[in-house]
Amino acid sequence: MNRLAALGQLPRILILILMLTLLQGCATARPSNPGDVCSIFKEKRGWHKAALQAQNKWGTSMHIPMAFMYQESSFNAKAKPARRRLLGFIPWRRPSSAYGYAQAIDGTWREYLRSTGDYWRVRHDFADATDFVHWYVRQAARRNGISTSDVASLYLNYHEGPGGYARNTHSQKPWLIKVATGVQTRSQQYHAQYQQCRDSLKPGFLGRLLGW
Image 1 (cartoon, rainbow, N blue to C red):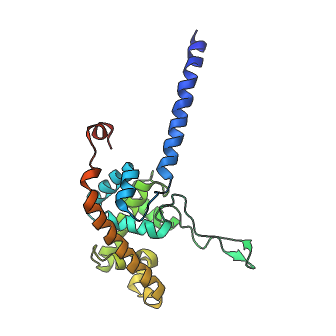
Image 2 (image 1 turned 180 degrees about the vertical axis):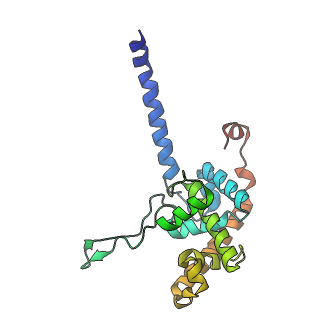
């Protein structure tokens, strides 16, 4: 009788597994309109919740990590640097260990985990990646005396490392300065867009009940 009851539960278990698989796919799929933060958050309500939580935790604008991740990975959860090519066509090593939404390298990610004690975090999770960028921005701002509203300088820190920024390595890279300016512009655009839709992103009764 118990065996028959277990067999009767199989369809429900299979449906649950399928639902979890589909939800995982939705969580890691890239947003359909990455240039519009309102579209991103309406499509991915969990991202909005994570962005708000990280903003409240670290005290820096959610639009900074969003602009960084747009630039670094185009919101690709599994992004990695392209492999180098030997002789122009043989796939070789990647230029760095950068991975995930924020393109965090192995060493810096380990430092973040040790600093926060959140050893369960992973680079291909949006909430963890946005928390990481906030942490990095706060470290860089304190170390080099940069305002958290100076997004271009914060991105230069992110790209060159706080030590490299302090040594002014970015001054020899006009292309990087141009990219950093673009990241600041993106952050400002996201901020302006968000002001137009923030009220519509507040969860209704069902959303609050489900913890959205």
